[in-house]
Image 1 (tube, helix red, strand yellow):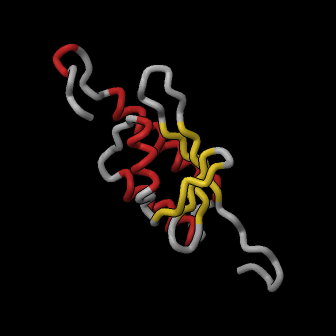
Image 2: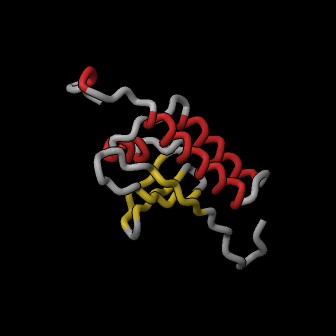
Length: 123
């Protein structure tokens, strides 16, 4: 608990969402912990507030990046929120968790069916 007059610690993490369109850059999203959930930024731009699972802002980013989200991704993000809240993990450990989620998204998207057979399938 911060001493009186001492600023409250800000928990801020980087979550990279891979851009899945050809030559699309990855999204680098800053996830700033707050008592209700997360506040998301892309660069200096505020994307908005969301709940502990990253809803609704994370869904908007995933839609724009064309990345498929792994099943239960949001539960893992919620787990990271609780870890930041209760202090059981260090910020470095939580950042490692976000890095692992990025790798998970990449692996899921590498396995998306591709080729002529799948042309025209709405994602």
